[in-house]
Amino acid sequence: MTNSNQVSNAWLIEYAKDEFVAIATHAMQEIIISPDLVEIPLSPDYCRYACWWKNNLIPVCNLSTLVFGNATVSKQILVVKYWYNNETFFAAIDLLKPPIFIQVYDSSYCEQTEDVKLMHHIVLSAFIYNQHTVAILNLQALFTQCELSSDTVI
Image 1 (spheres, one colour):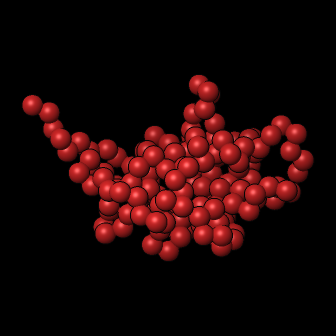
Image 2 (cartoon, helix red, strand yellow):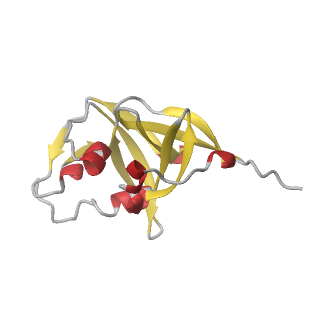
C-alpha cells in the first residue's frame, strides 16, 4: 500500500503582498540583503538588474514586475541554483520578505488561479497554503529567458 499524501519540503517566497511562489529546498543558495545591483541596458523590466555573487554576474528577476508590471527596487534577493542542458547555473529572485521553510502535501494540489495563470510559462503546478494559491516555480523556464549573454555590456 502506498501513501497517497506524499510530503515535499519547499521554500515559500512572497514576491508581492499576499502573492507567493515556492521553490525546492535544494535550489536556495543564499539571501543577500541590500544587494549591489548593476543595471543591464535594453533588458526586460522584470530582469533589469544583475548582481555580483561569488565572482559571477547573475541575473535578478523581479516576479512582481513580471506578473503585475509594478517596478520595484530589490532590497533583498534570494540566490538560487537551477540546471539547464546538464549544467548548473545561478540567478536571483527579488524578495519582499525572507523565505519560509514549509512542507507541501500532495493533497494540497489545486488548479491554477488567474494570478498563477499569468505566470503559466514559468509554473510547474500550484497548491494551497494558508488559504493562498502558491505557484511552484520552474526556475529553468524563468531564467533561461533572462540569461545574461557573454556579449552583455555593463
